[in-house]
Length: 222
Image (cartoon, rainbow, N blue to C red; front, side, top):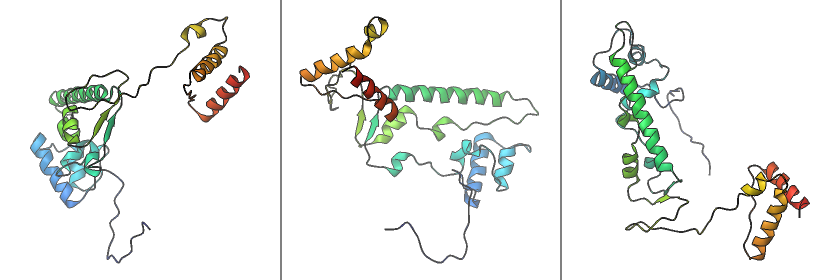
């Protein structure tokens, strides 16, 4: 197998790596969409002038929906792939979307109240550029969606609930707060008790180095 493509071509067009490819079609679509959204541009509108002349403009990706008929999401490339949401992922998505809406409203008000001689930043409506939490769920379609949670969740309709049976381990808070106690001695004893109860113990570390050092310390207190 190879990624090499062979063939004859009369010409080749090299574009700078960007989400926006300035072609006659994308330029024309941008000009129409920009005017439809914001009205006739002023003479000193650097974005509109640069794109109209086929020149790149710093930050023009902020108006990405104006260049294309539609924007694709990761779901277009992975139509059948299951999606896994970590704990609090939905809350994080909602907070991020609320932040996007706040920034949009602030920039829109700034554009409406800009000084006469200033060129305002004209923001694209968020629904053209981002998926809202509701649209994200709708975009999942019939694919399998999995939500992780550290809590016991009750069965809800057709939604399947799988209990992993995991529990939060000991944090040794009291032992670490007591200067007369060596916490590693307590940890070693706790591991021995767990093994005696025929429960498997897994020790993890942030890095290989920290894990190696932790193993040495535990071995010294064994």
